[in-house]
Image (tube, rainbow, N blue to C red; front, top):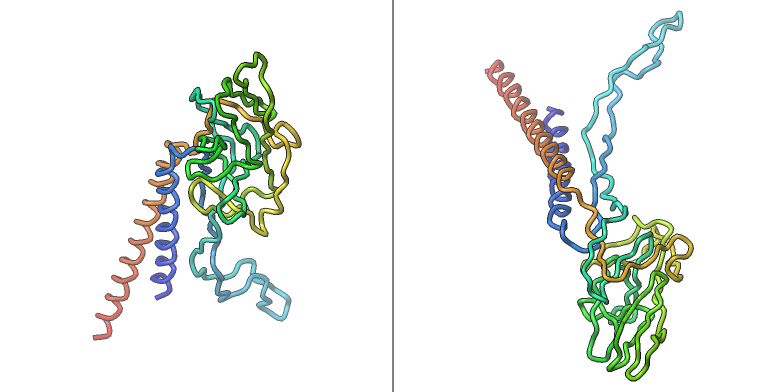
Length: 262
């Protein structure tokens, strides 16, 4: 019976939907996390009776047809790159991007990844690095015994050297933009890498060309809304249950038909 297969595709689709929602909920407190959603499309149809088919020699045509759908399929889990709220931390190395830009991170193999997580640290050499120890491009080193580290909205890094009275600019942070942010490939550790779908990275200074500015002492929170996710979870659960009921009903109908033939 066709209904068994159709309902099975619905159950499979909602199972994946619940998986995506659970990942969003699990990352509600992940710095810079961008939520995902599931997009579905209907499967191919069997056109038992096509709309517009001629039904008589006088040219009469069917105003409606008989189309039997094959179910549903998942076509994508796009990531929504909307701005998350900023949370003040007070740490001089915590940075939040207010705009579309990404921090550029140099990986151990000399390739680059991109992140919205600005919870940076300082390594033993005084370099600004991520929690995994990867260098934040373009690679800025804080001099020893310097004080008063400040990073302004334009990405200029300044410190006051020992014995000096005025701060000195020691480096310039950059931000990277992509034509299609949703085309970036997530690789874990709050990082993304470019793909053919994302377009080439466009490096530039903060506060220019829509890259956004930097907010020192702040971190961007995940753009996950708990109420919305719970609502979506309930809807997915009910849809799964209804598809299960269709399978049960189809099985009972097949059982009744089999009993009639005995």
